[in-house]
Amino acid sequence: MADLVRPDRRRPEPLWRQTEQSLRASIESGEWPVGTQVPNEDRLSAVLGISRITVRHALRKLEEAGLVRREQGRGTFVRSATMVAGARGLTSFTEEMATLGLAVGSRLLSADTSAATTEVAAALEIDVGSPVTRMRRLRLGNDAPIGIQTAHLPSPRFPDLLGWVADGSLYETLRARFGLVPREAREVYRVGMIGAEDAALLGQPAGTPAFAVERVTLDDKGPFEFTVSTMRADRYEIRSVLYS
Image (cartoon, rainbow, N blue to C red; front, side):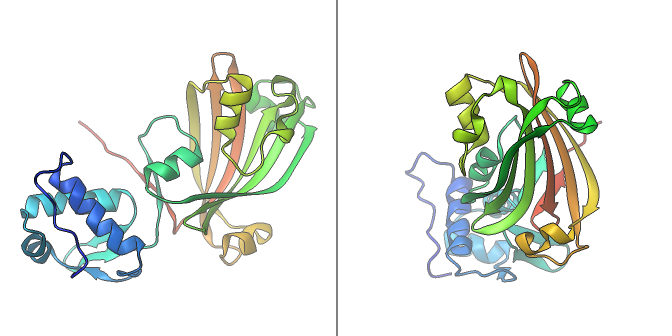
């Protein structure tokens, strides 16, 4: 508690934002490890010199970022960094991680050109057997594995793509080298399991529940990317807000 920075009312940032940043710093520095119970709203309000409403708003933002979990009747606890999916703009994995305040990481596992299967061809609206560029990558957040993603792109649209993409952002490469601007993405989430091939890479036993995600991304010319992902269920969440 001694290292928490009190919000400065002279600064332009809202008090809740300053509070969120102060609490986030305690989590990310390791001062509050995973499993630590965060001081209650009354205690934080007294220490930081702000209202409980401001504290509550800051905690809600940390919960939305997946850094804490709030349990009814027990309190708020630090959790491992989690990527949260829900209503959001069309972004790449790299951009989503940055938005959540997580250090993005990616390791290229394999890259090749192959013939489009029936599933891939249907998603990309190309002929079966057409050449597609395939990239399999391990995605990391704060140096811990979050998921494995395999992207398929029509090779004729992106010649020599394998020579440009390594461990950086695929979307950024497509924008910079090919002038592509994504317009729409369609995603399907299913409950799956981590296979034996992926278990060691994801740091989980084979058979552990996971999210199986399919994503088709389009630009003005139509589908340009079909990605199949296996995401760790303990580090990836789906949240929705419903309105009447």
